[in-house]
Image (tube, rainbow, N blue to C red; front, side):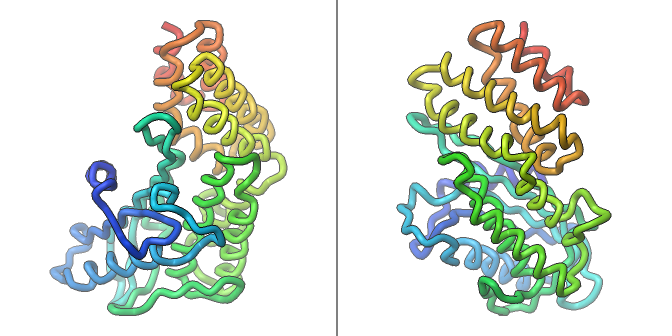
Length: 301
C-alpha cells in the first residue's frame, strides 16, 4: 500500500479534471491480492470513486482549482466474498499546501483495515450522495471521509473552522449505524470505527487539538519562510495544545492518527532552530508518543 501511495503522490500534480468541484483526489483501486482475473469492474470502480469524490459539490463556496483539497485514496481489494461484495483495505492521505513554498504537508494519513471495510458495488452503478438522508454503505463511507477531511482542512485555516463538516460526518456515521451497516460504523466496542473517529474529533475536550491545527499551519508552517523562529514557537504551542488534550484522552483515535501522521514532519521542523524550543518539542513528543521516543533524539542533537 505504501508503494501505491508514493506512486500516486508523485503523479498527483498530473491529475486533472475540468469538472472537479471541491476535492482533488487521486484514486487507485488495486485487486491484485483478490485472486481474480476480473479487471473491468475494478477500472469501473476506480472511475466511479474518482467521479464521486471529485465531482460532488461538497461545500457552498466556489473554489479555484489551486484551492481544492488534494489527497490520495488507495483501495486494495483483499477478498470477494460473493459477486458484488468486496472486502478491502484503504489508505487515505490529505495534503495541505504551505504558503510561500512548494511544500505540501501531509495533514493526516488514515488506514482502514480489511476487517473494517466491506462494501457492495455493481458495475456502472451511479454513486449519489443525498445530504440529510439515508445513503447506501459505500456512498456513506466515501462521503464520511470527504466531510471529515474538509473539517480538518478548514480547521487549519481558521480556528475551529471545520465544525460543520465534522458534524456532517457525524450525521453520516449515525445514519449508517441506524441502518445497521457493518463493519466500521460501531459507536461502541471499537476504537477504530469511523463513528469513533469523528466523535473523537468533536469531543469538547479535544478542542485544543483542533485549535492546534490552526496554530500549526496558519501560525506555524505558513509563516516558516518569513519568520522561522516565530513559526516554530507557534508549532510548539500547537503541540502543547495536543499534549493537554492527550492527558485527558490518551486513547483518542484522532490524536493517535494525527501524531502518527505528523511525527516525521515535526522531527524535520525541529532539527533546526533554538535548542530550548527543540528540547520542549522533543519532550512533548516523547510524552504523547512514547513508543517512538528513539525517532525524536535527532531533535536535540
